[in-house]
Image (cartoon, rainbow, N blue to C red; front, side, top):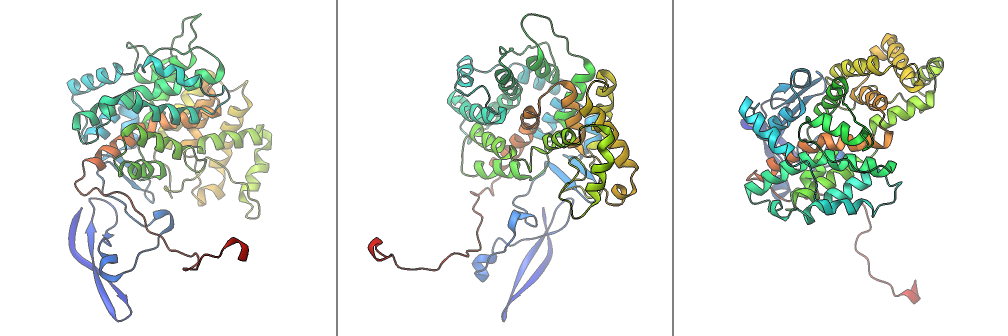
Length: 431
């Protein structure tokens, strides 16, 4: 960010205050209010921080109006179409695309850290079998700080590096273990001869009594899901990770906080909500009824998986995800799955309806990722853990950027107090 030599003038009563205007490399200018409270004894009021920049960052840029998502300047459709997840991880962590030698070294380091400490297996037996996988992941990831003491000193660059690699490497293993535990099957250890996505699918779906071969189409679709969810600027869970890390908390605790935040249905549960909506619709012949309800302003029903809070035109991730959805459904078929048949027909009818085109309510990444995960055989309870697995690299990149920022301060939002003013205590017998 740079000082524009421009300022905004704020008038309060008979006094005026000049507030510097900063200019980012992309996006709107920003009014700098850091000294406002000290100068004028007032705060700004911005519930949800939707008009407040809490930090400066060089990782991800979003233009919701234009449908743009860039990671370190690279468009997401190019990364998802030409690259793969671990290369995108390298880009997010280090700022540049790797050379072939750098990528080989990075992939080797991640692969060699995919196993978890053997004693961590016992953690899972402490949860009820019907525990939600997100509850399990929050607890187990938070507990990693008890096993990996040699990577919790956030002031040490090498500790930060080791913690970053460990979290990226072990998150698929932990997510797969949470899934296996929930269905009563034995844990499957990772294999070093498989790529990141294939390894995850094998840990989820293989059993000891027979060989399991990962279909490359499914592995590619899984890799794209990881890539398309890798980072998304200062969303709720990323902001949670940054706020937790601003206190100096260890990286495992910070990522566990992000997982807990992502669990919320308004954040990481969107693709699960989409599948639940498809189950409510039931069969393709009922789609016109639900489309009519979606158009009715007096009906609270909304089509989940259409439109996006940030993207006001189209979701740039959805085009690539639709391609994967089509490939997966062609491979696995939809004939015996009414949910997938309903999803395909809903997509067709919604895209052909002028109402949705005018409102720019196009299928988003959650619509297609939910379809893919359902087709692969994942229960809806695993959708958000897979999101957490994908987003871990984004959280870590944001965490590292914040820790290395000389301007870092502990997060401390202010408030507009509306409670009682000072009053005197009354003894209980006089109340």
